Length: 124
Image 1: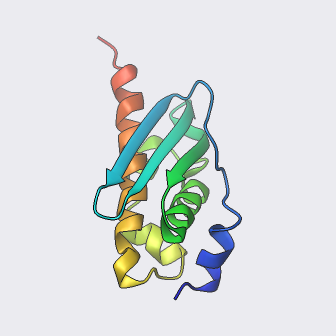
Image 2: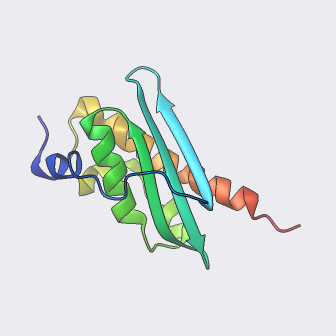
């Protein structure tokens, strides 16, 4: 059911764990499947210098969160905002149709974390 990339990221997730003093946090959930993702970002000079996640969910949800962190680290905020669920899915080698919502959750959580950072850092 899951390909080799997904099976690599699921049991060996990259950047898993809570981040102390994040610059921004985004949390999303899907009540239908029970997946919950929380993305933490550290931003310096408009770049994501660190990204972590906490995910409660299936193997596809954990793999999607893990892959997202690898795709985003070092990118500018605008580059990170351009990351879509299709990017996550493609880099994982294709999620099963029934699990595509996991890549949506990962991208949505990232976008919320960036929005949270930007909201906290508005200049008047």
